[in-house]
Length: 118
Image 1 (cartoon, helix red, strand yellow):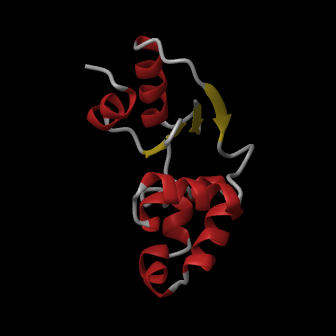
Image 2: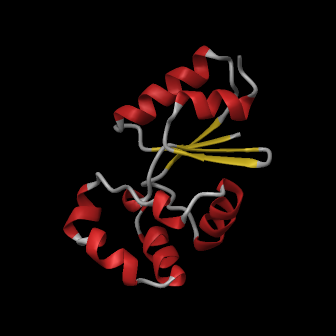
Image 3: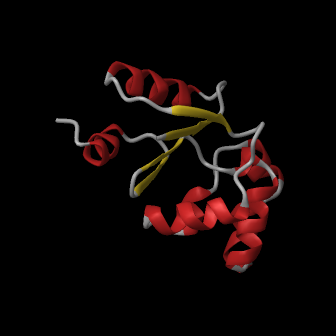
C-alpha cells in the first residue's frame, strides 16, 4: 500500500497516525519530492471512481494563485492531468493506493470500508 502525502499537511499527519494505530503497513511517498506522473494520475483516477476535479487541492495556495476554480471547467482532461503532474502541491492529499482501490483525501469511514476495518 502506498500513502502519498505532504508531511506538513495536518490531514496527512492525521491519516498517517490512523494507519499506524490500525496496524496498516504502508510505503510513504512525499508528494512534493515525487510528483505523481500523468500515467499514475490516470490510473488512480480510474481506480478511484471519482471525478478528476476531486484530485485538485482546492484549499491549496497554488490552486488559488492559478485561479483554477474558474479555469478548471474549461480545461480538457489532458490539460488537467498535465497540470496535476506539474506540481504535487496542486494534488489533493493524502492519497492511499491499495490493491484495487484509491482513496483521495482522508475520510475515516471511507478508509475503514476500503480496508475492511470494523
